[in-house]
Image (tube, rainbow over all chains, first blue to last red; front, side, top):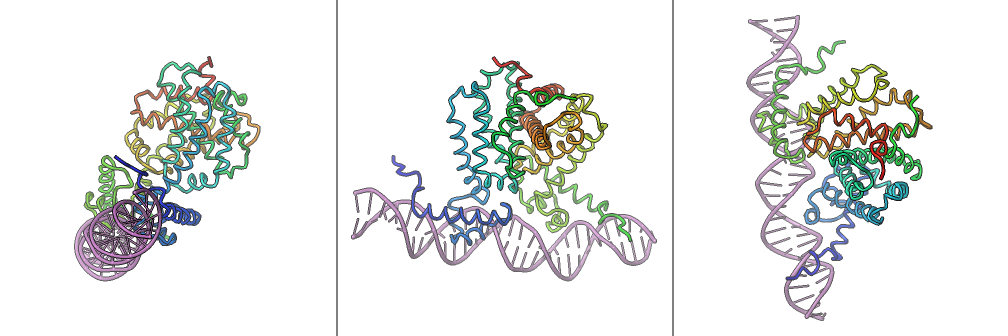
Length: 198
Length: 198
DNA sequence: TCAAGAAATCAACACTTGTTTGTTATCCTA
DNA sequence: TAGGATAACAAACAAGTGTTGATTTCTTGA
């Protein structure tokens, strides 16, 4: 019949509790890695009852995941802001936006990639890009089989993510433009297209 | 002075205990993921005292890591079996050996990649390949900067690992030869080299 | 404004986790 | 093969985990 408001997500108390936990978690993440943070110390620092934590999250990892999801949501919005045939106009502009996004969220992303031992972060990143690209992929390039297409996609997405990772770990010293150009070259023409073998 | 034998690793009792734990872990891994296996149930299934487990491993993840390392050791041996200038003779033979190796260890590798939420597995895989390749990389291709070289390497390794991952997840239905050819094409000539844009 | 209804709290539960201590059993080598 | 070394064991520990039920406090719509 009714379902007035989900389950009461916009209750001031809920917002307050989650905010307290969020702040405490970010603080703890600066000191130690996810796997050595206990629910007990988190809720103590946040001054929230331990039972309350379990009302909102399954465990610490679940909480980290939910925080990641907020970031992913924004990333997803970015990807879907382009028209369906955006790839026809070249990779460059999209790649630049992606790297610019990561530039902004670099601190969080780097923290999660570095110390976090949770593959889901990378898996979601890859899955999201792959899903978006595969929509118009087949129209742009002629593959001999769907299988070949899927493997190429895995390769390219894995490569892009690997590049991003090493960029984040290196402190994001290079400009998004620089990386976008490099990525495009690698994706389109590979190592031989970039330079000549001696 | 002395150091007769590490700390007694080749004691029959140690071998026996580790073997019991290994079997029990593999059995449990077929039922559930790493993070929901408790030390208590593992040692019960293995019929080993719980305290004994902690004498050999820090926790479940540490044990999984050590088991991975055995696999990685063999992989490392494979990579280093080639002469230093092996890449001059083409990518194909090396790629075929790599995929053949994964074909053999497919069950373990797939289990770890699928359900395991531990990035270190992929990181080690990437790091190992990158280290090996970078040795002769600079001699084969002319990069404008060392930075560019590093990024290209990250891209290509990430791509290769992404491809491997999707191959494992798909049940390894394709032959190593097939994948080696595809990888080589993507690495050398990218997506445009593979097919023509319409 | 006030009375559901929902969230947060408190307290207690059976459980797992690392760690330690003292004892027993097994190994391997001199 | 006897004996010192050491691994495995049993038992107990403080601390964390995830869950539950009873109670208090807050929020919001009528």
